[in-house]
Image (cartoon, rainbow, N blue to C red; front, side, top):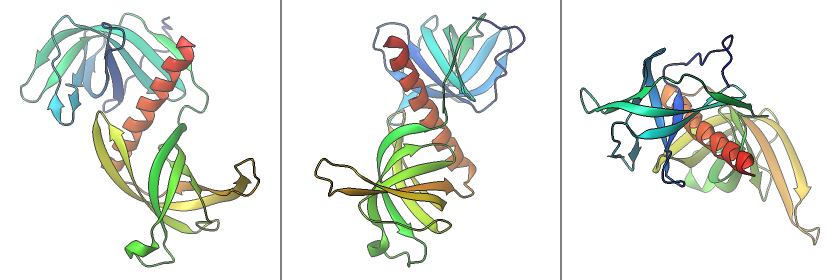
Length: 230
């Protein structure tokens, strides 16, 4: 569906997810938009896995998805040209039309990520980091589940965790402000108490922002695909 009053309005640096139209369960890749000319082509980085370039052929067709605020945009495009110079990149045909879906809470994604947490009231010694789990993650914050309380509101936590992007594991070390805390009984016996801590990330560098954006975008798009198939 195309809305002439609401064009793609692409942003350089955005993360796009591409997936070959055949076979049906082809792998998904996260690529970066590095340029475009409306009506002509989108220029994106060549997909990689574990740092290795993936083979992409001219005329190959891909389903392309991207997250714009709370909308997921999708369209089918054909590879116009592949190039290794001056760096690996692809030209994808600019879409004539696209579909869009509104996703509630698009920026917040359910997760199950191990994380090490330190309250900054304590020193940075390894013994002061405690194991916990990130149960949802966004580009600006997270919700953490733990067996014991981690902090009180307005305290600062140091988080260390890994996220996987296009087959590569990336480690993040972030300072975050505690916004809320709660607890809940999470088993039938009524004895297992789980503590939840909501945090907002402090200032991040550009690389950390890009990593989180890529991870969140990829998982929002995956969840959207599952909903549509259901």
